[in-house]
Length: 60
Image (spheres, rainbow, N blue to C red):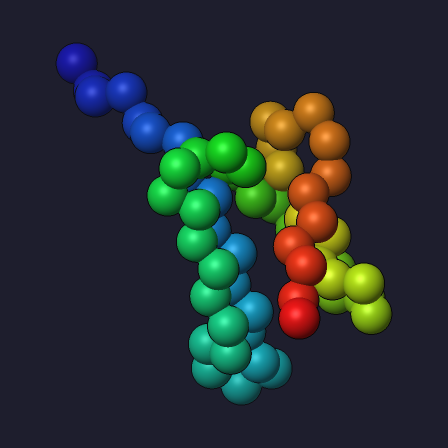
C-alpha cells in the first residue's frame, strides 16, 4: 500500500538555459498542485489542478 501524498505548493521560475531564478514554496498546502503561472505588473497569477480559484502572489 502506498502512503497518502501531502498537499504542497511549489512554483519555480526557470531561465531559458535551465537556471532556477526564483522558487516559491507553500508547505502549508493552501494552494497545492500548481500547474502554471503568469507574471504581470500586479503580481504572479497561479493556476492549480485542484484549487477553486486562481491564486495571486503579490511581488513587492
